[in-house]
Amino acid sequence: MNKTILTLAVTVFMAGTMLTGCRSSEKKVKNAQDKVQNAQDKVVEAQQALNQAIKDSIRQFRKESEERISANEKSIAEFKVRIGNEKKENRARYEKKLAELEQQNRDMRKNLEEFREDRKENWDSFRLKFKHDMSEFGKAMKDFWTKNN
Image 1: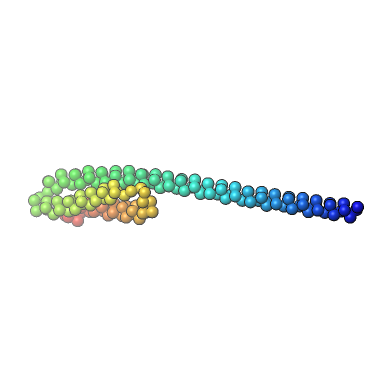
Image 2: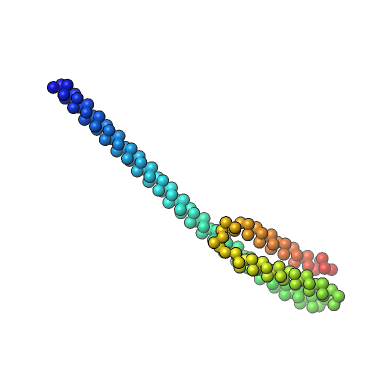
């Protein structure tokens, strides 16, 4: 009888250990799945925040660039008035250079308008090239009178 009770106790103990061990693994798996899901949710949130930041950056860049292009147009208009007061022999040369600058400004406006926000992968290269073009245009505007005199 002692042997039967001992065998029964060992069997119950082993069954209990196995059931407890299985539940522990199930909990671990569930906890791991929860952590993975939380991490995936955070990645999605971070991606959405990044996309919004890029859109905001693009909008701000567009606004600033449009303002600079408009300022360029005003400067070109002022230069046209000033060219009208120049001597006839210099006027043709000034008008030609001013027409080139005016075309560059129109091209920059066109490029800015044609850029689509859905092409975010090209955003950095577009922004760098556009800033370079704007910088070169600004230098050309500053040098307009000095190089032509």
